[in-house]
Amino acid sequence: MLGKGCNFDAFHLAWVEIWGLEVSPKVRHFLWRLCTSTLPTRALLKARHVIDNAVCSWCGKEEETSSHILFDCERSRELWEDSGCASLIEDISGTMCDMVVRWKATNVKKQQRAANLIWLLWAQRNLWVFDGKATPNGLLLSRLDRLSEEYGKYNSMIYKPMQP
Image (tube, rainbow, N blue to C red):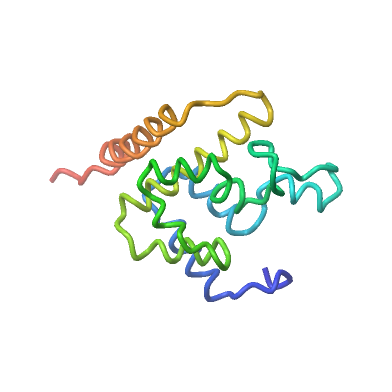
């Protein structure tokens, strides 16, 4: 991280926020990869000379960076609006770490919803890129609701207070 010129204070704050989110471990790990710029987006793969074309596979208009595919692409924007979490990405200037730290000011349920939405968007991107399949937005939103609800149920079952 030192080689990337990272601000360690902001990096630490993001680390604390990510690993403290009430979402599944796979979503936390995914957010960590997002903040450390290690997601295999088309732009990153092109920079590493793995592929020749970095254009977004959803819109075909811009380069596919993690910011574009998860926040700026038309389809992503629609899902952010429909999920009620658009306010969390209004100001996506700065790094992904900065954005996650700003989430601290919102309620836990909205943070949970946003984190799960980012993970679902990446899964949909992969489904489209590798299988050519698209899922309707309504179905994705119902999955988002289910993910948030199931994690709460799981947590209450696993972490029950001990009976004397």
